[in-house]
Image 1 (cartoon, rainbow over the protein chains, first blue to last red):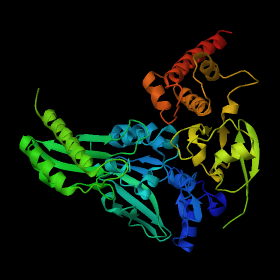
Image 2: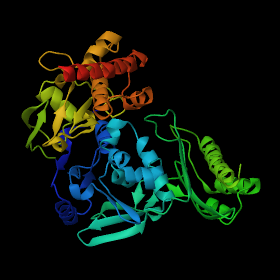
Image 3: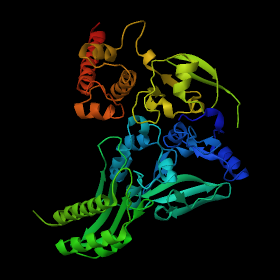
Image 4: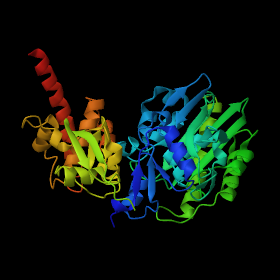
Length: 292
Length: 167
C-alpha cells in the first residue's frame, strides 16, 4: 500500500532557471512537484509512476501575486492560502477567493498551488470554473521563452493539456474588469468541507438595458476536464432574462454537457443539478434587474 | 532508482536537526522514525484526516504529504513543542478539562490545527473553529467537546494574556 521512497528521486534545484534547464535537458523525464497534495497521495497509494521528481516548492519566482491596474498575475506555485489572505483577490476576483476557501482543508490550502490544480487537470478541479468565468490566460515558460494562451484552451482531454514536455506553467493572468458583472459560483459536494465536487458551476454576466451583453458559464465535473459551456452561453447572449430564456438555457446545457457516473455521483444527478445551478444564477440575474 | 541520502537540515520545536535520509521520505516518517517524535500520528496517509498535522513555517500542513526534502530549512512545530518546561499549553489543558480527547489518535492533529487557528485568530467564533478543524477527523467525541475545548482555551489565553499584562 505505502509508496517506497527508494523508488523516487527528488531534487530541489532552488531556482526557476535551474528547473527549466534541467527539464529542457531531459524532456519528459522529470515530474514537477509543488505542494504535493496530489502526487504525495498517489505516492502513498503506490500509484506514483514518476521515478524522478523536481521540486518547485520554495521558488520565489513562482510564488507571487502581482496586482497591476487592469490585471492580477498569480504565480503558479501560489498556494490557495496565499490567495485567501490577499485582499485584492477577494476584492477583484471574489469567485476565485471563494473557490480557494473550499479546496480541501486549511492544511491542504497551505500546500496546494493554483498551478498544481490546473496542471493536474482533474475534471473536478476547484479553481477552474472561476478562472474560466473570469476569462483567465495561462502563461507557460521554458528555456525557449514564454507564451500565453486562454485558459479555456489549456485542457485538451482527461488529465491532458497542451504544454510541451520541456514547459512549466508559470502564471495565471486575470483581467480586472468584472466589477459590474453579476458573478456566481456554487459547488455541490458530499459535505461542506474536504469534499470533491459532484458538480460545480461558475458564471459571470453583464446585463445592460435588461439584456445579457456578456456571459461566461463554466463547469467542473460535467466533462473530461473543466470547461466553458459555450452553447449555453450562446443561448443566453443578447437575451432578456425571462422564463423563456431560462428554459432555453436549461435545454442548451442539457444538450451540451457529458458527465459520467463515478464513485462520487451519477451523470443523471450531475446534469439535473447543473441545470438547477444555472437556473439559480439566472434567477439572481433576473431579480437584480427587476426593481423591487 | 536512487538510494542517495542527503543531509536535510531544519528545526523541530526550536531545536536544529540534521537527518540523513531519502528526499522522498515523508516528513511524518522522519519525525516518528528518525527523530522519535511519535506524538504526530498517521491516520489515512493521504491528507484527508489531519492526524499527522504539524506546523511548518507558521502554516498548518499534513506531514504525510510533505516529502522531507521540502522541509529543508523550515521551522517545524509538533505536538511535543506545545508544552513549555512541562507546563501544558492552554489548549492541552482545555482538551483535558473539557473531554476533548478520547482515544487520542486525532488529538495531536486537533491541537496543532487549533494552535494554528488561534495564532491567526485569537478569538474565533464557532464557524471559524469548525472551519479551522474541518480537515481533522475524530471518530470518538462527535466534535462538540473538541470545539468547546478550543472555545475554553481561547478564553483562557485571553485571561492569561491579561494576567501577564497586569503583572
